[in-house]
Image 1 (cartoon, one colour):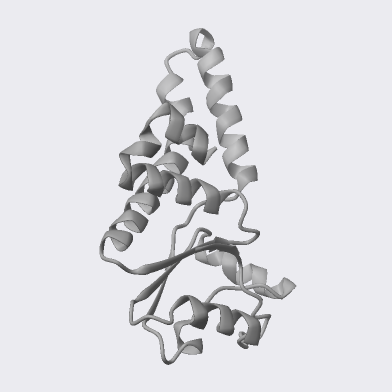
Image 2 (cartoon, helix red, strand yellow):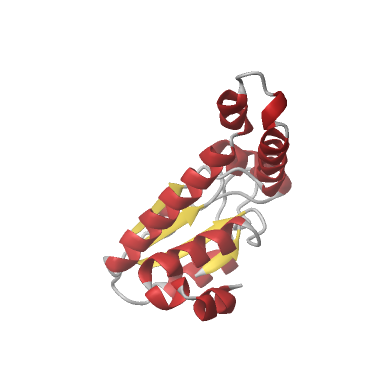
Length: 167
């Protein structure tokens, strides 16, 4: 399952619609693992605007784990990609700081975080857990995590045709 953040608000009260959705997803005896793509601090700040993150105590009849993937938002990733590109283009003028500049771009940190989270999600799915992946809006990080997890789990998505289906 994939969604945007839940709407629990500043004081952390549960939203009846969110609780109903999660409860419906977990009508089986399976464990639910919620992968919140955001860093915990970002999720906490979203509470000011009415959003927030899941709390397992809102679901007393369901086995729920909430895990934060610590993926930065699209703006941070875009900046990292731009910095990486600039460093590669200017490699000749880097005066021996090329690898240091690549490291400072944080691009590889973001890729590693996404891959680690996708591996964790894949492992949970292999254990037959029900999975919900969400972040603030549910459109960039969630899609990356879902698609990468599918590529890990199913070799079809590692073909050109399968990759095109994901895109």
